[in-house]
Length: 324
Ligand code: GZL
Image (cartoon, rainbow, N blue to C red; front, side, top):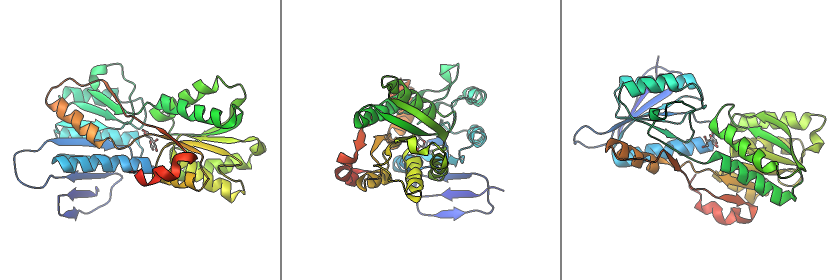
């Protein structure tokens, strides 16, 4: 059975049943002709970043009077593929999605191409042989984010650190590329080494669980720094450190990525040392790209989101400005 929640501008009607994934359709208010319909397959709600990313997309669709069929895949690729196929069946005008991992998309993207529906990638990239399978990819430069995290840590520690690493979702573009960028910079610092590395799947709970296991290991005392691929895992690790009597942000220097509000609060409290921004608020850029695709205008193959680096020295001043 499927839980189907039909959202209109003023009324929410919850229909019966419960399903593995949530699909919602937001209908623009008011009359007028057939509105543009967009199918969006979202990875899930695994982190504060993801929640802000979803809200940015939903808000922008509402603002532009676009019918949005939004599907939450709960971090499962098979659910995303099902959603993409359902968008074909619904004959939406444009399909957009954030692919949970890089591979395994070619067959369904070929089906979408056959159906003549344009595709826009957001947030994460796919590894496909046929570049015509999507019109553009809007997202951050994850390799650069990894480089920025490593460079900040090298500057902070004078190039000396024994690093525990909390990796994102295995096979995902941010996990692969953040690690790649981090290790590229680390190669310049012989006294900086990753001594432990394990996936926390971008969630706070798993980040805590993995950090607990790092701290229970015989060589736990060797850890002087933590690199977390996102703030949620870093925040879980901070909880684990405190429960183990380890001072986060001083006994272990912590650098993470995303720049969510809770990271700024942790920096202000001295528990996190640095977060590298990864901007989730790409709703406006997504719908500008949708307009361009529908108007058959040229689009760049890659639209890079601009971002910064924030450490404790800037945290308190920047916190009030944070939108996610
Ligand atoms: C990055 C995004 C990552 C975030 C995590 O663009 O894909 O996924 O860094 C999120 O917080 O879960």
